[in-house]
Image 1 (cartoon, rainbow, N blue to C red):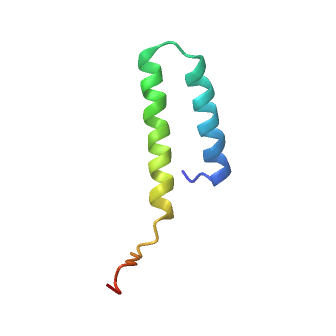
Image 2: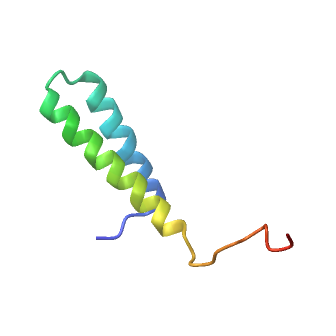
Amino acid sequence: MNFSKEDIVIIEQALKAVSNSSTDYQELEQYQTVLQKLKNNGETAQLDGFRYDYDDNM
């Protein structure tokens, strides 16, 4: 399933809102796990495979 950036932002906001109102520790842990996965997925999607070494001139 492909989500747009806007979809991911809405999902993150919804999870944060629900986690702020929940008192169940297991639910909170699940929400945080999903949020972390979304964050990691977004970071890996931005990696383009290039490595920039700025200290090559040393």
